[in-house]
Length: 219
Image 1: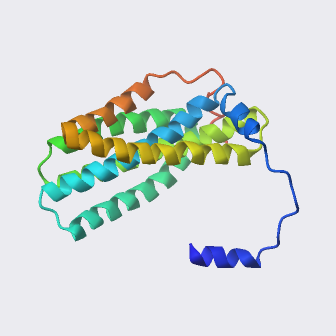
Image 2: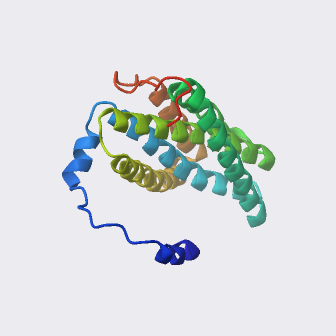
């Protein structure tokens, strides 16, 4: 971050422009198709936050060392990076909706299973599968959001800002809520709720304006 910040000093300053008013963000967020696309940003954020907390503590309960827990998340992060590439290419071929639904179903199956497993390796593997599924939702949801922003004729910068405003609070709420649920009701309830949220999102029909772009089109 420090290197990027310092390197930005060498860039030419942009010409003065007027920042969009808050009303512009609100108006875009309420346009047809945009709320559904923003849900697909907030939900992965929430689930990433929830699984990061619960799985860390679950591995610790199973006797995993700090190094083992760190390695588990390193591998899951690598799966997430690979999944981003694969999900992007899949979305380019078939549009965003099939990867989104597949990712939600896979996450709904893999994530709650973590609470029923007593093997450190199996828990780590399921974490990787869960994150791989969630990143498919996130990447394809981003493509859908970009398509919807373009459809309504809004600047992509506004859509990008809304994407971050949806994902970051989701991650915060997910980590806090999952920790509280785990303390009060256990891993099973916390992770079952994660799976239930995924299934609930699968059955939410996308609005008429939130259809996939033509297959083969790259956003």
